[in-house]
Image 1 (cartoon, rainbow, N blue to C red):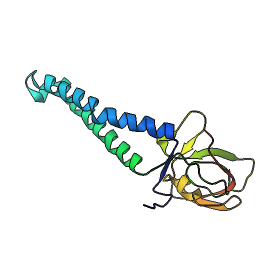
Image 2 (cartoon, one colour):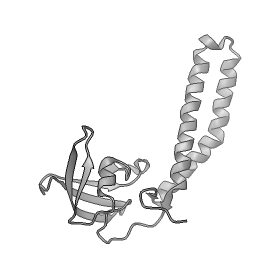
Image 3 (cartoon, rainbow, N blue to C red):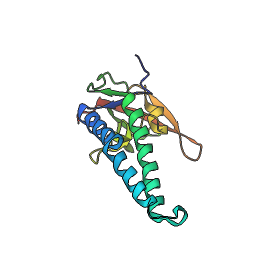
Image 4 (spheres, rainbow, N blue to C red):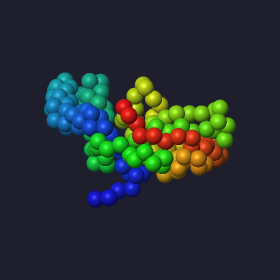
Amino acid sequence: MTQTSENVTWLTQEAYNQLKAELEYLSGPARTEIAAKIAAAREEGDLRENGGYHAAKEEQGKQELRVRQLTQLLENAKVGEAPAADGVVAPGMVVTIAFDGDEDDTLVFLLASREYASSDIETYSPQSPLGSGVNGKKVGEDAQYELPNGKLASVKILKAEPYQG
């Protein structure tokens, strides 16, 4: 099955394994734990004034949302292969851009899923305004993206290299 790079989430094998383990825990043992919390809180009586019950139901909702997010992310994951070092911006690449053509005002970031974010390098999702603006562009090209205020910003692609972890 072929997907466009916009729908693919590039992950290392380590990141994929970590997210898969989280999904398995949330889908199995964590569901059992939250069901037990809800059952215990339900036995305390009047559900309208039962703070423990409402807190457990809210926790369950957050947990189920995370399960759906992880499931979708892992379904669209491309694992193990770094993108080609051909100077074309793609998920899994470290990108250096200059704002408005000013090569002194630069930003270096990893174009990848926010799930892959680390403290080592700033991460932008390929679906973010900046990420979608630079995705598919070549080194030396200009890209535009929409700012929160609706205006367009221009950047120049200075460098695009596969992330080395």
